[in-house]
Amino acid sequence: MELSRCRICQSQISEIISFGKMPIANAFVEQSLQNEYRFNLIAGYCTSCYMFQLLEQPNPDQMFHESYPFFTGLSMTMKKHFVEMSKNHIPDEIVNNKDSFIIEIGCNDGTFLQNVMDKKIKHLGVDPSKNVVEKAQEKGINAIAEFYSAEISRTIDEKYGKAIRIFASNVICHIPDMHDFFQGIKNNLSPEGEFIFEEPYLLSMLKKTSYDQLYDEHVYMFSLMSIQKIADMYDLILVDAIAQDTHGGSMRYVLKHESTGQKLSQQGLNLLDEERKYELDKLQTYQTFAMNCESRKQEFVTLLNTLKLQNKVIGGYAATSKSTTVLNYCGIDKNLITFISDSTPEKIGTVAPGSHIPIISHEEMRAMKPDYLVLFAWNHEKEIMEKEHLLTQQGMKWIKFVPEVGLINEK
Ligand code: DWN
Image 1: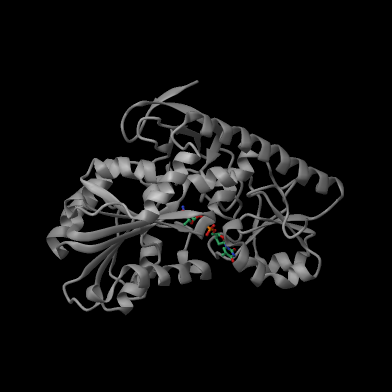
Image 2: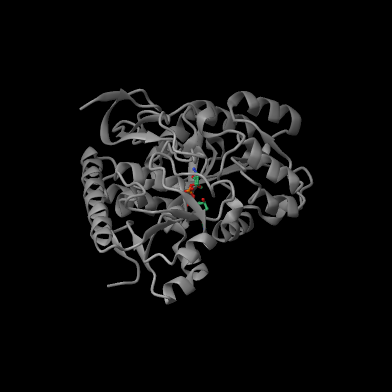
């Protein structure tokens, strides 16, 4: 068993599962590259600070750059989700105070900050990918194309003062240097402020065996246990946690300065109890997860091969980041899945990382009348089933692989 050092507490940690040599999840390229960059996608778990984490991660500049191909605003589900988030976590006393200042880290195309700007609150969006920041700026949102860091937090503090709210959604799990990041939060958060962030939830992933949430960008998979540990290192305290349906099961964490004296809510205490009951603090739990991943892989490949032998046309729906892990871990290429359709203009006409499956538009896909579509954006099932109800009515069948492998809506 290979041993590495925990990214958070430097304890020795063990490898849980290796998914093999993996390309960058969002490296959708114009043509099949022979020397495509790959890294070892290996997950490990630290029994000292409870952090589930990747043992290797590519250089951040390889993942987040001026042509990052993911845009939050393409999902109606996420747009509605962020309206709820702003309503529930930006009370009137903040809206009505002209000195209020709100930061969003990882603001992408400004989908969340649009709500803050509409409330006429002083704000700042920070995101390393220039192309998505430009989309935010086009909406009139105050945003900068930078990696958030302790250093930039000092510049922000000098220019804007303390933030009463700091938000981050599906961002923190992408940041390898958690210590530098949390030092920045400590610098920017006002004495009574709240740091509110949400990420795919470790317990959801374990329960659903949704191993496709593990890819180069997602270097951590958090739990309340691991968040409490790292918050404590920066005199911050977890005061609430709210389960979310987004991205297949996420958790929204609310942190404050320890000096506020606030304690963890009953809701948070109940979630911690569930983590203990599921034995998130035991290595065996993760070894079981690894075995479940292998089982899903065999079941998925067997199903696709069976349908292929019946000369069925099998496509994929939504060229998600997650799909890169599934396709490369399971060794699936265009001989099994002929194409993947997607709504992102920047992805259409490229090929998927590693598998080199061509990416086409949904309109082109419908014209091809596939027999089956693998739903790679399973976390958006409701939204997509509504959008593509005609395809389903015409007899096209949806294949899922999370939480089980099989056909959707077929018992
Ligand atoms: O953490 C991350 C989450 C927030 O978004 C990032 N690291 C990257 C990204 O992950 P993802 O690509 O797995 O996100 P989604 O939202 O599960 O999938 C987005 C992809 O699905 C896009 O390429 C667009 C496509 N899509 C589509 O074609 N039709 C999505 C929807 C909802 C649709 O109806």
